[in-house]
Image 1 (cartoon, one colour):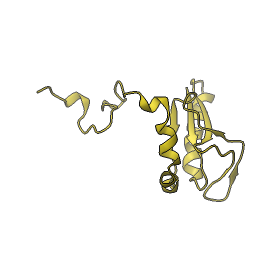
Image 2: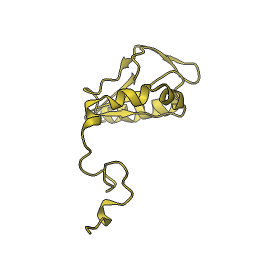
Image 3: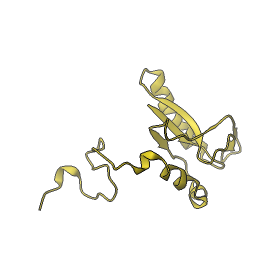
Amino acid sequence: MRIDVLAFDGFAEVDALATYAVFANARRRGLPVEAALVTADGATEVTGCYGTKYADLVPWDPSSARVLAVSGGWIREEIDRGVIPRQPASSPAARRPPTGRTTSGWPSGPKSSTPASSTTAT
C-alpha cells in the first residue's frame, strides 16, 4: 500500500518526516507499505519551516496512493490557498461513499457521533 506524506512550503518538518519514518520503518520490517513525500500543487521542491530544502518531490497522485497523510502544523495557508482541499476532493477516492468501520469501531463516514456498537434502530 502506498502512503503519501504531503510536503509544502513551510511544512513542519518534524511532523511530516516522523510520519514518513514510521511507514518507511514498517516497510523495512517487511510490511507491504511504501512511503513517499509528495506535493499537492505539483511543486518539485519545497522549503520546510526551518529552511531545509526538499527536492525531487512528485505531485500527489490519488490513483497510486491509498493514503494522503497531511501532518505538520502550519497548513492553514495551504488550506486557504485551496491546494489541499481542491486536489484531494478531485480524487476518484473522494467520490466513493465510505464503507466499513475503522479499527476503533466508529463508523467511517462523516458526521458520526455515536459508536457503531451502541446504535439502535428506531
